[in-house]
Image (cartoon, rainbow, N blue to C red):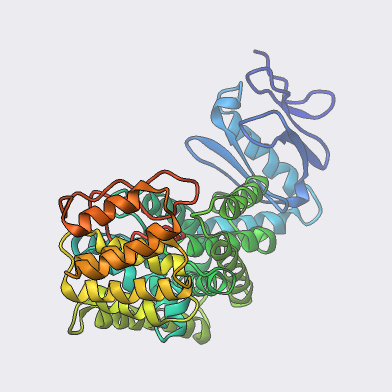
Length: 472
């Protein structure tokens, strides 16, 4: 393929795959947006903030975005290096071009001196350690640490922090894996230019804002670091629009893709029931606002003001205190699961369905203690009272708990009420046969598949904290 560096309409750098070439004109460059697609833009030389190459691509930082052009696009050997030399020459010849190149050199120097991502990896390490603890200790870790608005209002202030460190479904770590992948990628975008102290502060503010917003809008328990992740998205968006001229090209993400990623993931948070869109929104706003405040201080290469260091130290201290408070509550004398369930029965704002579901899961769990069953009784009785003894499913839960406590006569009386309210449902009659001894006590009948049936089916290894309303 022939190469004409000085075509009639400007200096040309041909590309493979039938793509139009990169063209350098008097004061601007016409080029592809990326290695994918064929969309093209025009960038003025005065808008270029940083130029560099890697083993795989050319990075062109500009005020409007960053453009990543793969080496495989270029038809000429050494095309990427020739392009950068030509751009540097044309910038130098432009008004103010020498000063522009000096700023680019300073950006390059700062990029080369960046240290490890201490805050990002520390956050990831804590989340993984807590996840391992969940596997070793059991679902009580999730129960003591998740953000449940009712428990928070009742004095469990630590939940505002600890919920960000806990992930759902420890035996299926997809939730943890996705959050940690996003945390590392986005953490790098934020920590590289801002440093560890500012990043710790952004994470702390994002996590608190995520849980607080969730508590204001929703009432279901929430766990997961996705609020912190969205806080990092908010910080990255702020940096892209406010600090683009100060960032090395490879510390940035193409602006169009960044906003598209934000819109898609934000929409998913409100469309998928098990994902807390309100927590994501709160985390984004918190991260965006924190980054805006923190970037008023000097750049990373300069010494951070004392208030920035103090803010990050406060986040670390509060996190440590929150973990310690949750640990004390979990380990103090008495069975935590029973205390937790008993508290749930007396908290305001807990729906009858949530009370009923928790009582049912306790009743069908493997070898529940007497203390735990007595807590389930409180839950079931409260659910029955709130529904004025009119819901046969909730009456069935109370009957099940009474039977498991060794009170078959009471169980029969309660299940008779359920039968009277749903006389055509054979399940309740089979439950009565079980309570009277006509059916084996361990032979619990299968729940009917009726549209109005909301009682949970029996899992292989049920846990009272496998809450159907849990958001992530």
